[in-house]
Length: 130
Image (cartoon, rainbow, N blue to C red; front, top):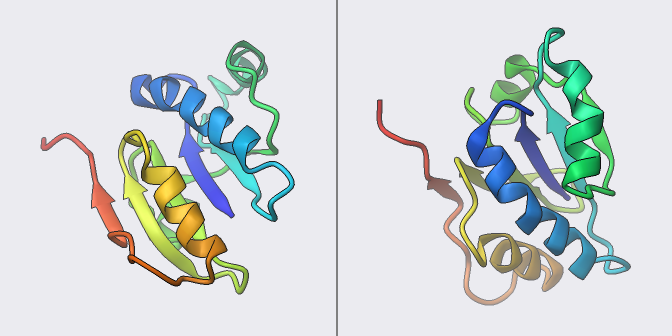
């Protein structure tokens, strides 16, 4: 499973979503589930449907995810954050911040190979220093 935490107001989330849509389409039928977890608050939840339509997101969307959910899963407290979860439900890799080209595929392919071959970096941080 690829679990991506995002929000409609998040610029990097908007920038990375087309890559996730493309990856989800590429892995269709290959036993990989992509789930988008929106952390939009009540005042921005109304923008989710338009965001999903505009970016042609077809994977399931979890509406109502929270910072607590993110922290519980080890995703920090800033979006975007993407988790790569194996078939036993174990988080095997995390990318905190905007995905870069190839990072999703590298981790998904590794999981599909039963974690054989070159091990991707388990924690990547692309968040801006504050």
